[in-house]
Length: 116
Ligand SMILES: [Zn+2]
Ligand SMILES: [Zn+2]
Image 1 (cartoon, rainbow, N blue to C red):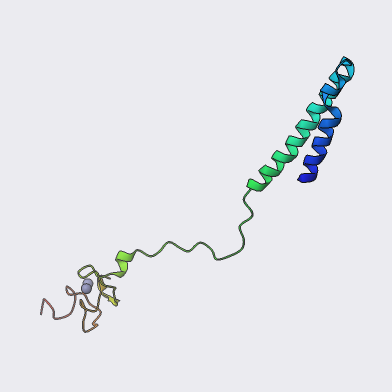
Image 2: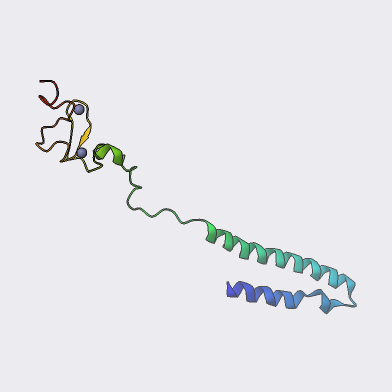
């Protein structure tokens, strides 16, 4: 980068139209050269700046994790506690308080709870 800049400044000094005052032909010619040099310099500088802004390829690594399971599906509705099991009939999450005996049934479906 510094070399490009030094080269550019050297060319600017060499071709600066002010040096050719009193020689309109040479002045116009060097003005053209200056334009091209400046254009090329900016292309290099801006091209490098553009290259820097391109995001690097994604490094191989852990894949983005799957969406987290719905927490509500893992918590007992009545107590908001983590489910230790699910009702085998309706699939309702059951915490240890809902189903103290770990029968695998919610209070509605536990055999003998309501309807026997
Ligand atoms: Zn149930
Ligand atoms: Zn519960």
